[in-house]
Length: 205
Image 1: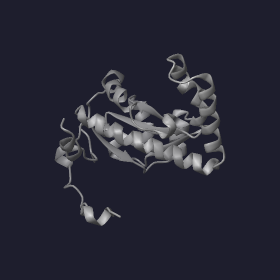
Image 2: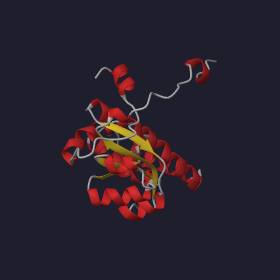
Image 3: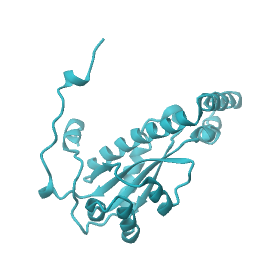
Image 4: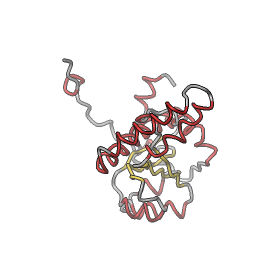
């Protein structure tokens, strides 16, 4: 889909057509594109938990205060990010050493720099940066999904700790948001909400 059209067509789906099934194979091409999303120092903080099982999805619905769109959606995606992704610097960059792009000395320098950057700023910064990177990835996911004919809705109205418990998400990972996915029930769609004129949210200096 042409990009401007894609942006216009992406909407936050308030309801979905029930009974539309999605599989891991349906979603893998979306995630194959999402992996190209930017991340700080290419640490790729973001990890997704995809809930397609109906029974487990209903448990997530309970944690989302009973919201119907969780029930009608084909799946629910929990977007998480590792606060300590910097500790994976060596693993992520080892392939660059094997390719001869960097040497072992440069790899160790990158490890030391990333470690110092995060540990000097502390836990609160690590938490903020995890959510920041997860949000970048999540937006890419929603656009990639729409490009393949799937509708989504980002959500923050849920009990994070209950979701963590249901899905066994480790405490090292921040839960940034939930995304419902499926085929939108367009008959339930409202008009697009008011958008500020560009001049109201952009300042050129």
